[in-house]
Image (cartoon, rainbow, N blue to C red; front, side):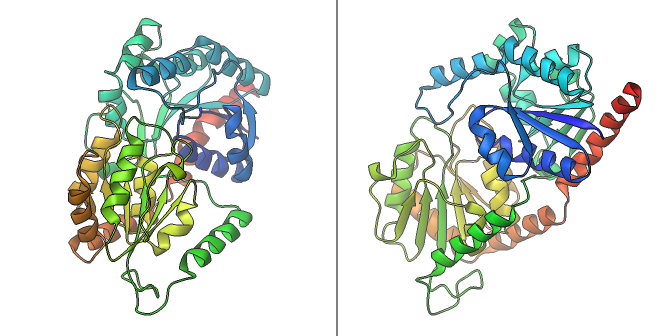
Length: 396
């Protein structure tokens, strides 16, 4: 039986793609061990995958309120710390790993594992062109290069790269990544318990709906919109959420708002047609949603489109992949992108337009059909298997 290590960190939406691949690898008869921050243990266990904390990985809370400089400093320290690399190598040696899948953010880990002679596969959880371009040019990339783990050096040394993106959503440069396989968006398969919870959430959300058929074919009297900016903190996020709540006030629709850990729902003024929650199961809500308003996170956006739901993107941060995701959504005709500093009046007009009928709905349905036709986790495992089997044969 081949053994694969999956090395990650708590940085928001980067865990689900790696966890989905690890889950499928284990389901196919291999051993999958996820290494990461201790706070990720419950999510990994819920997917039925083995977990252990990564020795040497610095603590990092992505929901903590920091300014831009503070975020860059904290994240750079985590991503370029050689202690995490040494920890990953120690676990790989102890567990006799055949292949090590490393989150593309963990530059010091990627270099250490590769230098130790392990077959290394880079996992890219959003647009490869973003990492090869804007990310590599950030201060994080510059500091990493000074510390001997520059992005181009680390990614270029990997045996292969798995990108959990739709190829047509990323027409940019990705030359930094060798043997790039764009497999499509990956999320973990739900456990029986989470499927039951999802059904309960849908029942609860629909409990008050009566009357005419909704625009998604249910029994709702009017459209429903999901507003969710991020599970991690970006400066100004609370102000943007309030603008969105002000925008939906008085519209003939119902809104569900999820704030995540970084914003207290009690700090927001909610209109009568909006329910503000800290957390909710988006996968459970999406079948009954007519529009998602998000920050341009790859995971949130792809989940919405997989259900054929149009997306309005308010890019959360200019240094992240958010602007590129918004541009890709607009280019596909599946939604729009607009500045997060837009006025409530401007946002109100866009939300009213996109929550209703129009060509954006057919375009989102087309993208959704494309996503649902893929087996991205299976395609990712097909990349890993030859790498792991080659190492296993050498050990035997």
